[in-house]
Image (cartoon, rainbow, N blue to C red; front, side):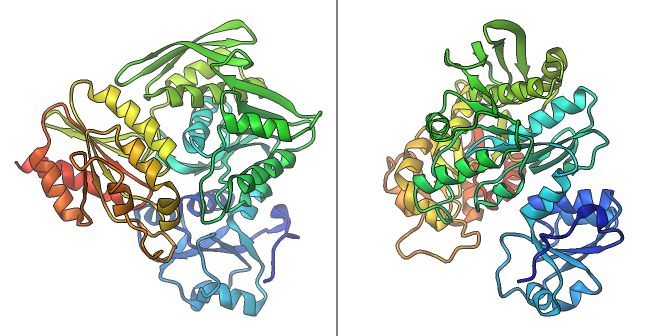
Length: 467
């Protein structure tokens, strides 16, 4: 494969850039920034979407379906990590010797011109990245950003800002986050996930070790001092030049939260910095996990020399991101929430917050496991985390890019759960029918998973309204 590692972003000029898989959350964000910088952008994807329509409105030429003729006169190809070697556009780019870059490499180019902060971790990185972005915007910095989710207030997942800071979500799922080489980084937590790429927990730690090593000389690292995985990582990495800031609840942390109050729709805590009381952290999003995410953003603001009061005001204005405990609607006193959680730890946090929101009502979940490999490894843990709900409907596994694994299905999870708390129902239509008939005033219904289960939120609301 020809590569673009020698290409200087500043010298690309009027280059036409073609994105294979432009509709993905990461790819669309990079395309949006490239358009803002004046590049001619084209792209292709399997299906049309609202994201693609918004890129077209900005001037991108986008084709539905992959075809070698789509490349036209492009001089650079950027490809999603989900694109296979048999893709016809990738094949013709190789044949013609057109430079090809991975998504992470393209994002690294964009970050290289700024003071860059990369947010990594097994859980919470999308929300933490969005929180930091909103707080810096509120402080008047106008950062550039690229996030794997859409910020509710901004209505977008990426922006080319006028400020000197670039904030980016760093996804470890395929190891590509080593490309970024940021000035500073956040690590929220470390745990085994993405078992399609990592064969063991040790491989995960090796990837995060390399990530810490990739932070630029005399940079900074903000890390959760309460997390067992982070503690283990810090014991394995030695960098005297790196400024390390720990955050969490424990006494060993530089930035701490205490006096925590978790209300049904808000979260409050007191922040201290090295024993000095800073002030009160007030959030419009729920859960202790989000207080920790906000604390990570606050500590990073401090590392960037942003005023503490400005950071607190900015974090208070944060209202969430799409598909992260997102309220999709309320009908007859029944709330429908959509959440991207697809790992047992994430589901625990989501359902704990849902229980607090529901109060005396029930928590009803529609869960769609994401990937056969993850389901095979975590079936038992999925059953334990889902048991926090009053009832769970299990859809069949969302394959993503994987082929089925013999014997692996959502039934593996169902068999580990009490029969009165779960139903395996692969028909989305039947799930909508059953939920709408059984839901009561005060219930919280959650569509949960990283696949297309979110498509059920609106039909559920409509079905309840029709009764």
